[in-house]
Length: 321
Image 1 (cartoon, rainbow, N blue to C red):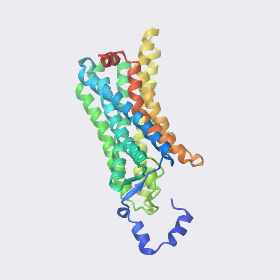
Image 2 (image 1 turned 45 degrees about the vertical axis):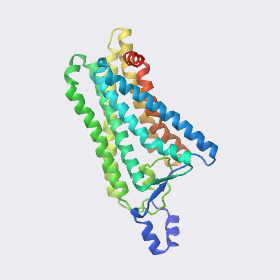
Image 3 (image 1 turned 180 degrees about the horizontal axis):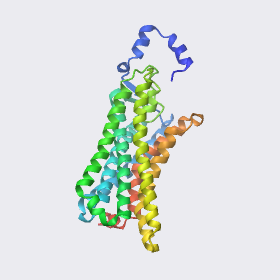
Image 4 (image 1 turned 60 degrees about the horizontal axis):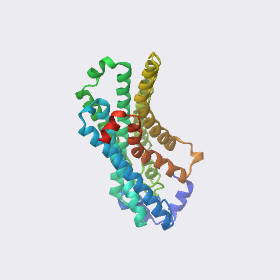
């Protein structure tokens, strides 16, 4: 939304220059938010992100290799875990390498097309991961609540279809939001208050009043995210009810152990992302936005392999081999 000061500032700009600024194609690059101004802190951020990135590559790469090479892991749970690792590798590779390069070379620039590509792939992979976590909740529900029908409900063809639906949902969501965002005219400069191209930050540069188009896509995004959230919530309500009916303490512990990694990953992604996008304006802070963005975009891909392998004996045995 434009402020009064924005109109006052624009009134001092010649008409021809305002016309050029209002055209989104006239912007050839965006300026990302720098982590620090001093060279020492920039290098510190580079090495910190490099360590996190290498940890994510190693952890997810090991899981992909283990699941692909060990026939004992050819089950629905590990098939979905392999897809989750692929999505994690893609999402962290979309944002972190560019942030590292900017810190290393002391620059903030990202090209217009590079920014559009970053928005597309980040949305594609993150929404795909959220949809896949929903599918994995269904996998845990069937395994605990309907174990006798597990092979029927989660056959190989059904697993492929559900994974494809998760990837396809992310792709559709990313196409709609990317096209909508970069078709809007931008006239509020080219500086983004985030270390990667993020749609809310780009919309702050817009001078368009296409509220209906924005509202339609926001409604679509809210429907998708709330639908997945409700499905995950209902799945775990049924799981907890089934687990509490298990007579043996060992059986309850085993059932909870099956669900704990998935619950931890879902909680980490949802809590940080929801707080980042739904926090009240009264607690707005660029530093807080930066920390939250790191928490929901960088940390999960790095820690997900650790969470899933920590209490998984089969996976740990395969990794040791």
